Image 1 (tube, rainbow, N blue to C red):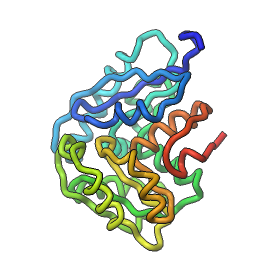
Image 2 (cartoon, rainbow, N blue to C red; image 1 turned 180 degrees about the vertical axis):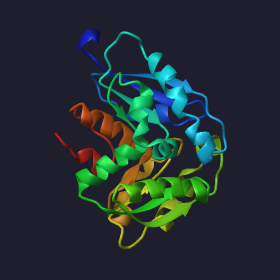
Image 3 (tube, one colour; image 1 turned 90 degrees about the vertical axis):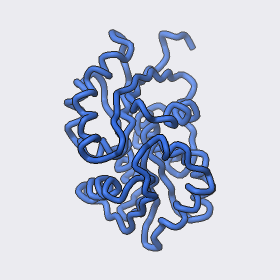
Image 4 (cartoon, rainbow, N blue to C red; image 1 turned 90 degrees about the horizontal axis):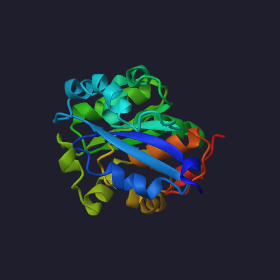
Length: 234
């Protein structure tokens, strides 16, 4: 494939996120190219600090290879996307379709026919509620909300496989049709297939959902972990 034929995407990541680019490298298929920029973020992950990301989006999007067509743009923060909601498209300036982890998870649940979930996050409980309340406002039933109690996304990125797995299994609810693991900094992607096998239901992570949605919206097939990557909406 000639370079001019590549499907190009943009990603706006938080300055403190140590996980999302590695996950992107695993999920973006041949024939695509991801261009990344970052925005300042002030820990801890309080609602006030999350809202401050909104006004920073437009300038960050403008830095994504100016003058080049993008098939889509991802905003890499689940809790901020829950707080900002529908305002994100306007804040990003309308250059290309914008996907967010919260919106992508909702798109994925709809594609999977799911309306009851368990929510696991590495956050403080108050930040977990921002995501859980957003999901419920969009018609999703959140049957359990579980928090690991971290305030800084750099600490979340350093969690071990064993810690994440233990929390994920404990966070499930017997009536939930799926488990969602929030936070783009959480290194959960390699654990999804094992967790699905152990829980017997779909497991979605923030980064898995985000890149699946970006590719699905652009009608570009891709392989990835979990039941979600076997879904197509086109």
